[in-house]
Image 1 (spheres, rainbow over the protein chains, first blue to last red):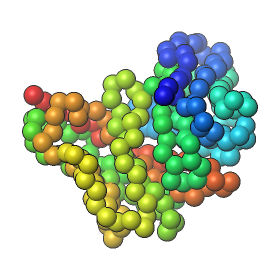
Image 2 (tube, rainbow over the protein chains, first blue to last red; image 1 turned 180 degrees about the vertical axis):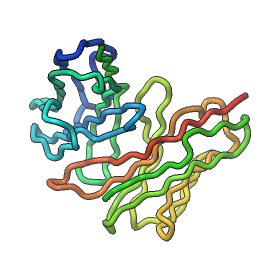
Image 3 (tube, rainbow over the protein chains, first blue to last red; image 1 turned 90 degrees about the vertical axis):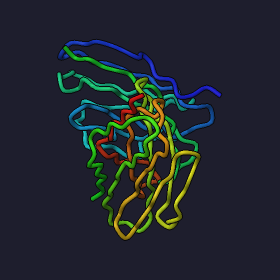
Length: 114
Length: 117
């Protein structure tokens, strides 16, 4: 069974550019979440999607957005990149909904902003 | 507000030693879940265990064991007879009910565990 796939794995952008990250969940999983991991702030929740609907959003500026497609694949977009956006972006999918669901994580997309 | 504290930033032990990773959480909900995840150098978070707030039974899985104590709001993780392959960053996380059934984990800062041969 294929795991959560994130693309690209590594990317370098410059300030002011925008970036789109992609996540393919495990087959059958309809919930997809995104997390940002930085050395200073640790792992922080960005947003969660279920059946193409954003159900929850973390405390991030509007430059961070996302969407989910009918096949449960998800993308997140960061516009007007800042140096502080350099991070590992992790996507997770879940079969269950609600608070007890086990999240399966991808290997992440490592974004470097110069 | 939800909060998870892992006071140990880094731990280094020699192989075969036992090691305990501490996790203390804060929540106002009576229904919540606690998790432990392992993050190897490759980056993905690997699920280790989930425990709900109504189940205080300790759990053992091979060399791993978990001690959940609601009275002290702690969910500690012990590795017995540690091995070099256990070297990783370990995260404790808390999940509370969210609107529309959404899932959201609040993570601790993580503990970097190094097992030296």
